[in-house]
Length: 141
Image (cartoon, rainbow, N blue to C red):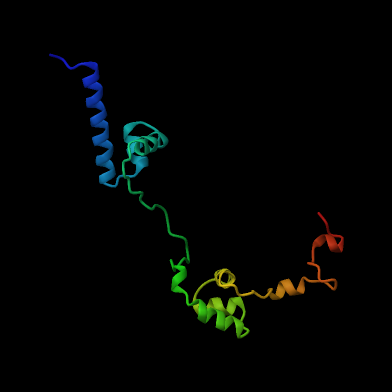
C-alpha cells in the first residue's frame, strides 16, 4: 500500500526537522545550510525561530583591533577617580589604566564624577563663555 498525502507530508516535515537540527548540532553556519537547501538565510532563520531550534551562532570575521575585551568590573573605578581628582587628565588616566580616555570619561560620569572640559574645549570658549563656532567668526557654511 502506498503512503497517503498526509503521511508523506508528516514524513517530509520530520526529515526537514532532523536535517536542520543535525546541521545546527554540527555548528554549520546558517548561510552554508541555507545554500545547501537552496533557500534564503531569512527563510531558514524563520524556520529555526518558528520551530524553536537552538542554533549556536559562530562569531565570524576579525575581532576589533586593539580591543582588550575588558569588562567594566575589571577597572578599579575608585583608583581611577582618585587619580583623576588628583589633577591628571583623562588621557593620563587612560594610559595608566590601559584603556582609552573616552572609556575613562564614561566610567567617571557613571560614577557621578564631574568631568573637566578638555584643553581644546577650554580654548574654544570665547569671552562671553559661549562655545566657539565657525558661525561666530563669519565662517558659516
